[in-house]
Image (cartoon, rainbow, N blue to C red; front, side):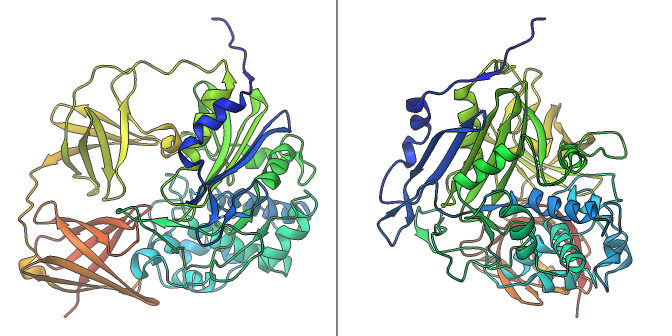
Length: 526
């Protein structure tokens, strides 16, 4: 078989067409930087930096880059290791006091690579209190002093965990004796020449030359809505696309950090089974259409970003978006399609059995909905956002490229489906949907002491509702029955938070599943 030659080509008009839908001057948009062999070839802004001002986005505008922050936080810790101040296999309990044993024993390596198995209070505090509550890192850490269970045994699964990076932030600050803000600025940003990059923990203050975030609701109305939580090592950076291109170039021949540190950052971790997570330390190390890619997106609810390298084509891309309804990741992969010669052909879609319905795992209660999508499917897992899935050449339903890192797929198997999550395969059986189901006698109050969480279920002639109440506030939910025991719960207001509530048949308890946080058990209280 002939070896494909990979190279990058550049056609400005072709890239302009990718951004045509947001190339306007009355709505928010995106900024983009593209480099070939380290030299910028495309740097533009599209749309407004702030809908209240006639100021356009530029590649020099500070924008939220969200979870792209993670590999910077990992590098900061590894720099401390290089100085002999810490070890990558140290347990987090060495640096953060008061943690429950299951958390205290988690290694720094497992936190950085999302294989620790510990719970993620960063995510479920948004579920408990709404996304706009001002919850601090210290308050997130306090949950680890009471939660005494885990999602899975360390190293056996991969599950994205922002809470692990709140712990990592605390460890870095304990070891360095200064804030993560200062560690990143002094040891990484300044030496790399990233003078417009900083850690911005809160969106409630003012930072010069910064784009505003814009949330767009289902009716198409924009609002000033942002995550109210403190953002540190999990996703607190703001940067410009020009600064990010400088960083992507630096990654080709790093001078900040040793070769060993960078090898660790870019080396995917293996699960206990030997399965590759395709995730190193804060970076996805994956492939797309037959070429290796190194990337990490960032999502902050009212905006998002993508930073991606195609090493064999010497292509670097950084995109920042300041609106919730446009995906930087989708745009980035379209750029790769347009610029990289030698990509493997897009596989032909096989004929496959179309099958819609709701399916439930007997093993762990996972709920998957397959709905029709113009002759294809949209998949919802545990009540989350619906994602289009398409059959590969064997007929297995696969996620689109921007979400492929989740390593989740579905195979139709008669009347059932086989859900694959990394190396784990589970059979889910169809259930009869009962849209007229009611809560009945299961109305009442439920409680989890470990999560310090109360849920109050109510019902009247207009339907069922739930109110989650935690340490720092509350969030109200609309409840939609799937069956008498299984309900989709959706946070009211502008929040995208949704999940599944499973009621015990006897009414003695319930279970909540929200995205990466699963199996929160509450028992009936009074």
